[in-house]
Every structure is written in C-alpha cells, then in structure tokens.
Length: 370
Image (tube, rainbow, N blue to C red; front, side, top):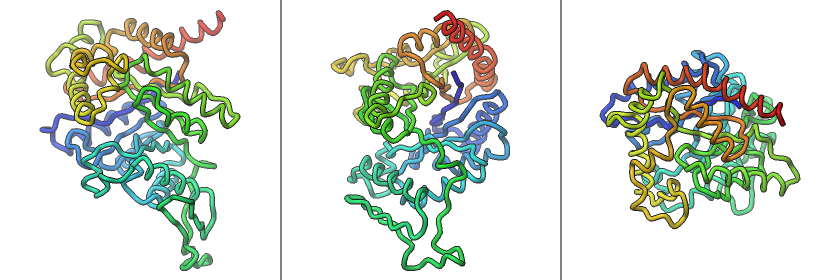
C-alpha cells in the first residue's frame, strides 16, 4: 500500500496568507523527503480558509524543491477556465516536472467561486464533462484539432490561423504518454460518477470526510464501470484519504487529534461540517441515508472521521479499515493546519517510517498465509 498526502488546505482565517503558503510548501517538501508517493493540493478562489487559488501554480513552486514525489492537482476545477487553458497549462507542468504530475480534476463545488465567475446558474457538472472531453481531444489530436463534439459548448480549432512551419496554431502535448494519470475526488456515497471514471480509466480518490462504511461503494462502482468496457479494475488505482494523527503515545494523539479545543483536527472538521451543512451536503457524514441532521454533531464527525493514536493503535485502525472496505492501493494522509508544527511533522514522520512499514508487513504476511 502506497502512502500519499492530500490537503485542501484549511487554515484559520486570521492567519497570514504568506505564512500558510510557506507552511503548505514545507509539508509537501517534508513528504517528499519521507518517501510519500504523491501530494494533492486543493484550490478555491473565494475561501479565506482554503486559500490556495491555483494548485498548478502552487505545485510549480515545488518542482525544484522536491525530488521524487508526484505533484497533483487536488483538484483543477474544470468549470473555472476554458479547457484549452487547462490542457496547455497541465501539459507544460508535466514537462516542467518531467512527468512528476497527476491531473486531479473536478467540476468545482464552491458556490461562491461559481458566483464570482458568473457561472452560478450553470450546470457545472456538465461543464466539467464537456471540458474533460476537449482536454483529452487536444492531447490526442494534431492541428488544426477541429474539436466540435455534439452538445458541447467548447469548439476548438486553429484551422483559420495556423502556420505550421512557424509553429503557429500548435498546442503542446503532455510529457507522459499517452497522458498523465487523471484522478477524481469522490465525496458522495454510492457516487454514480465513479462508474464513469471506471469506463474512462480515471482513478478514484475517496475523500477523508466520508464515513468508512460508504467507501466500499466507490470501489464497487469503479469495478462496474471497468466491467462495462471489458476492463479489469486494479486495486492500485484506488486511493482512500483519511484524517490521521500519529503521536508518540496515545495520550498525545488524543489531545492533539481530538480533545484539545485548539486541535487542528477539531478545527478542520468543524469547518467541513459547517460547509457541508451550508451546501446541504451533510449526507457525507451520515451512517445511513435517513439519519437526522441533528445527529451530525461536531463530536459525531470527529468520532467517525479521525484516526488518532500511537503507532500501534494507528496500525490496527488502518488494518481494520482495510478489513472493512477491502484492499486499496494508496492511503492518503490528510494534511492539517500546523497549530503545533513539531507534532504535525512528527505525525507525518511516524506515518512514513513506522506505521506504513508495519501495515505493509501485516498485509504481506496475510497474503502469504492465504
């Protein structure tokens, strides 16, 4: 099982923007040194807490300060720009990073972003579907492209103005062939979108604010999509994100990961609970569809969404999660605000150097016994 990193990020809104950007960079540089496989950075335009506005720009600042970690958009919000821009910016990033790039994509869920861009009344899921078709076509075709899909608002051609011997009218293709890995974050239980991801060989990343009893539905739908196109789903392609804090002992972990009023984990899930309630999406925290909203308290969310403990306890919790939902290819560690930087760094270190080796040893032992 690989170890990855994902952050929205989510910072208290009183914090200095330059300082939080520096902190977010430091976390990913550290993840690279510790051997994390990839790092996903979120993006929003109009959220003071989630204050990375463009994940490609942010990740570009990390290319020369990291060595092996794959830098991923988490996600590029495809309703926010014309797909030509996404296709070319992502292709250039792929070359700058020499293929250390994963293209995480989504429609863009934040309504205040949509309002600011003047697309609040638009069907952003449809915009997303149209945009990804065009991006892939740009990467697959040669000039003049002549992209004109039925019922797709984006028409792309350079036929009228291209001068190929001068290089005019030519768009770049990615460094990775035939294209970078494309990943979609999945939030909703039983999401039908995962079936489509399976059909197109996009890979699912199950979000860390979805209760574990729903995670299996993502894998089942992904397998369904793969089967519909005669392909086999690979466990390695499924990422599962969880909020995890590893302490040197269970007491430290309980304080920082759960009980302390200043815990960044408490802050994170109070933010997420309030935002999901505001967006009428509290269902992501529910154990069952008809569960009353009143039961989705802050403590309820913390109880169900945060894994905390010393190394042994966290190893046991991760193995129990795998027992519950089945095998998956990558455990994605959710990054938090650094209230006490030494504890955040220690958790990331213990996760890489102690927890995952023990988890993988247990998986290997179990496989050998079978």
